[in-house]
Image 1: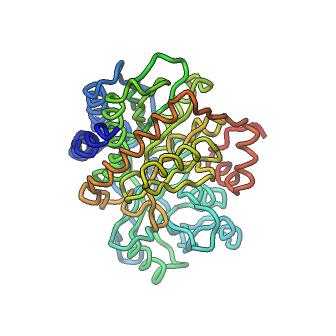
Image 2 (image 1 turned 180 degrees about the horizontal axis):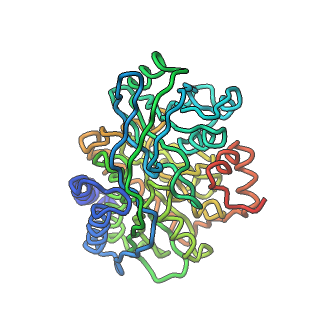
Image 3 (image 1 turned 120 degrees about the vertical axis):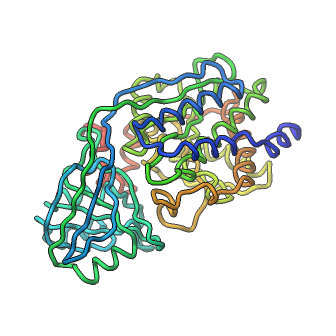
Length: 436
C-alpha cells in the first residue's frame, strides 16, 4: 500500500496538467481553447494507461462576448456580460434587491426595471440561491435588465451563464459588476434610470466530452468526472482546471492499482458545464444509467485542504468516505443534502448514486471562481496530492464487489427536492425534468 501512496505524493502529472490547462487561455464552451483542453486531457488519460481515450462531440448553443456597458447619469461603469445573455439593451429604473431572495421579489413591483442582486445569501438563509434562479425571478416579475453584483471585494465583476435547457439564450440583458461598482450603483442610482447593454455573437457551435476507461470489462461502472471548460475571462484554475487535474492524477494512480479494481472505472471530462451542464446532460441522456454504480464528480477540489463530499443521501457513498477518512487519519466532510449544481446532477436527479467532491471553505459562493482572479497561484500542489491519495482509495473501495450502492427512485429525489426547498428554484430556471 505504501508504494502507491508514495508514488502519488511525489507525482507531478496532475499538477502539470493543471498548468497546461490554464496556459491554453480561453476555454469557454464551444471555443477552440475548450477543444484544445479536451484533447490535452484525452492525451493525458491515454498516457496514464487508460484505454479507449476519445472525444465525443455534440452540438450546443454558442455564445461569444463582444462588449457590454452600464450607463448611469454621465458615467459608464465597468461590467461584463453574463454568458448567454441576449444581445440587447434596456434603459429603465434601477432596483437594488440586495440578496435577491425569492421572497424579496414578491415585495416590489419590478415591471420594466433593471434589477440588481448580490451573488451571495445571508447567513440566516437555509439554502443557496443560484444566480440563474435570481435571474429568472427577475424575468418572471417583468424586469427589463439584470445586474449581478459580486459580494467578494476586489473590483472583480463576476461571470456565469443564464438561459434554460429549452431556451439557451436568456430573455433580458444581463451583466456582472464588482462589489464596488454595485455599491456605487446602489448608493447613487437606486430608483434612477440606467442603461444595461450587451453585444454578443450568438450562433451554433460544438463541444465535446472526453472518455477513457480502466479496470475490468464489467457492464457496471464507476464514473470519475470533472469539467474541462472554463469562463473566458480567467485561467479557470479553481473552476475547474483543478478538478480535471485531479481526474488525471487519479487515472495515473488507479492505473498503477488496476488489479485492485473490481468494477470498470470510466473517466469523463465534460464540456459545456459552465452553460448549464450541457455535456453531462448529453452523457446522461445517452448512457445506460442503470449500469452506473457511482459517480465521483470533481468540481471544487483543491481550493481548500479538506475534502467535502455532497452525498445526496446515498448512505454507501458517505460510509465509504468515513471509512477512508478513518483509515488515513484525514478528515473528510460529508454533506448528505442534495446539490443540484455540477455534472453529477444530470444523473443523480434520476436516482443514480453520485457525490460532488469539493473542498471545505468558509466562503459563500465561489470565492475567486467566475472572476478574473481564478488563477493558478491560488492553488497548492500539496492539497492536490493529499486529496488524490484519499480519492484514489475512495474510488477503489466504491469499485469493490463488497460495496453496494442502492439507487433511489425518482419519487424519492422529488420528495427530497421539495423537502429541501430546492424545487421552486429548479422550476423557475427550467431545470425541473419531472412530470407534474
